Length: 423
Image 1 (cartoon, rainbow, N blue to C red):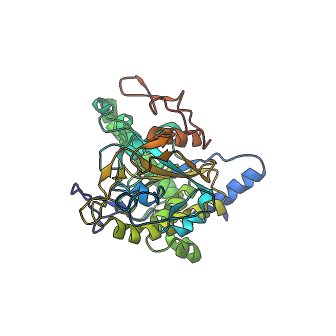
Image 2 (cartoon, one colour; image 1 turned 90 degrees about the horizontal axis):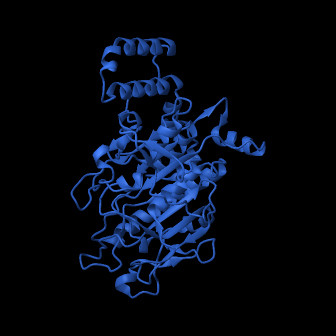
Image 3 (cartoon, rainbow, N blue to C red; image 1 turned 45 degrees about the horizontal axis):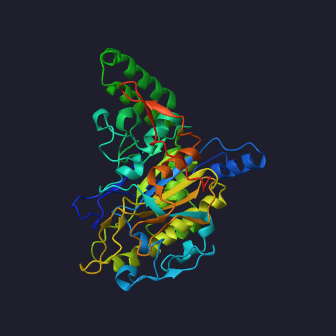
C-alpha cells in the first residue's frame, strides 16, 4: 500500500476516532505511449487488455443516501430534507441538485439504491472486505479486496498491486499481502546507486538472513522479503515516483479536477502505472448535525472531482478496464433529527455508485421505500458489489478459493453472484 496521510482538521467521526485521509497518490507513460493509449490500440486490434484495476472510494462517516442519489421529493419535509432532485442525461435517473456535473455524466455510472448488508462499524473495513470484523477473526480475519487481488494476481512492472489509505486488512493472507505503505521519501535511485547494485545488495541481505528464514514459523521474514522486493521494483522502475509527481500532469487536467480532487486524479494516475487496486477515503460524512449545510459544501466538490475522474477514464480508453466504486459504511436515518438538522446512522438501506469496468452503466438498480427506510425491490447485498468487482477483474467468485493458514479453502464472498444488471 502506498499512502501519504494527513490529520485533516474536522476529520473525526462521532466515535471520536480521527481518520487519516489519503492526501496524494499521482500519469505515467513509457516511450510516449500512455496506458490509456495502449489499451485503445489493443482494443482496435481486437487484443483486449491484460490490466484490470479497481478504484475504491470510501465516503467516511456514512453519506446520507436520500440526500445524494435517492432523493424523496414526495415525502414530508422531516423525511425529504432540504434538497431537490435534478434530472440527468438518463431519463428517470434523478440525483441531488448539488451535483449538476454528475447529472450530465449519468450515462457513465450506475446507482444502487437498495444496498443492504452494511454494518454498525465506523470504518472502511466492510467496504474493503465485504465482511464484519468478527468473520474468521480466529485466523486473522477477512482480507480486503486489494489483498485478495495481490494474492491472486500479483504486481505488474514495478507497481505495487495494492495502494490504499488508512485501512489495512490483509486478514488471513498475512503480512505478505498488506497494502504497500511507504511513508514519504524519494522513490528514485540516487546518482551513486545503480539498479544492479541495489538488487545485489538486497540478495546478499536475504542470503545472510537464511537461518532466521528457516526458523520463521510466522512467515515474517517472507513478508519482509516481499516488501523489500516490491520496494526495489518501485525504486528501480521509477513508475510510482512518476505517478506521484503531479507536476507532470497537464495543468488543464489538474484544473478540471479542482482543488481537493488530488486523490481522485492520483488514483487514475496510479492505475496507469499498473496498480491493480487503489483505495482512498474522501470527505467527512458523519452528519448527526448540520447535515444539509455540510452537504452544501461537500457535494459540489465531490461532483467536480468524481465527474473529472469518470470523464478522464473514458477519454483515456480506461472505462472498460478500470472499475470505480463509491460508497460509505452505512446510510443515514430517514427522519431528520432534532439535533440541528442532522441524520443519524442507518443500516436498513444505503447507496452505492459503480462506474467503468465494462459495466452496463446509465441505470438505477433497485429502489427504497417512500421514506428511504428499507429496500422496496431488488435488494442488493454489498457482497454482490464485491462479486461484481471480482468479476470485472477476471475472477469467478463461484469457483475461486484461497487456502487459509490451516489449509482450509475460503471463498471470496458468501456464495453471492455478481449484479446481473451490470454484467
